[in-house]
Image (cartoon, rainbow, N blue to C red; front, side, top):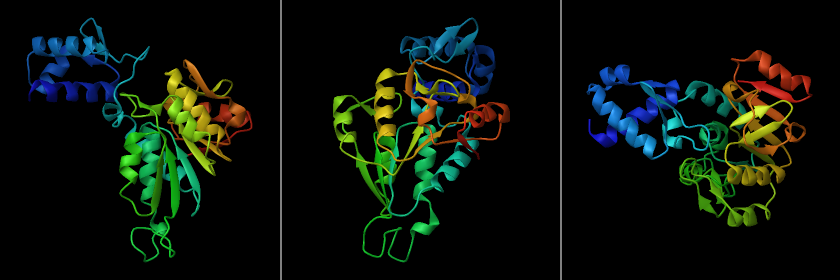
Length: 267
């Protein structure tokens, strides 16, 4: 395993476990502890993690792990959330999706909907039009859906964020202000029953807020580890959220949202 492969492996393990121990990882990766220490030091210099005595933890204060290294975290729960959210979409709808691993799961489930197909190819309607239109500011979601004949993809402009692949800034805002959505699925870094949905980055939060505001129905998708948590920049207050789709691992946290009058789907 070369250095590049080790760095990728270390970031994936950190995303899955939340903490790395030098000695344990060295055995797992089959290299010396000194090599792992050097690798962790190099990743810390890139601000992808924080070194601790004997290991490393994610740098959650100002930075986030790149999306590709977070994909394995809570994957089964996010897949269930994605299917439950995609089931809310009806043929002909205009759907909004922001960036993130949970909304990427929604996108995959949406593209896989078997009922989009009607004998006209990959889900195209009888009149040759796509079954659903997706508006997104996420480059990875746009790339994954662009090959699907069942989906028309509209991408906002903007500047790409390296950790989330989201497009942000004035160009993204200009496009989103000109469209209307039937339903928006918004992922968040944190969702609190009193504070609402929020993100670590203020630029992402601003564009996500605009995407949410353009929708007739706002659905926040978040696994249970995000519930009852607040972070830096608010996307929307709880009153704006029509439905919260989460997993079934934290019934008490989900109940707090129901007590606020919010509809909660436990996938």
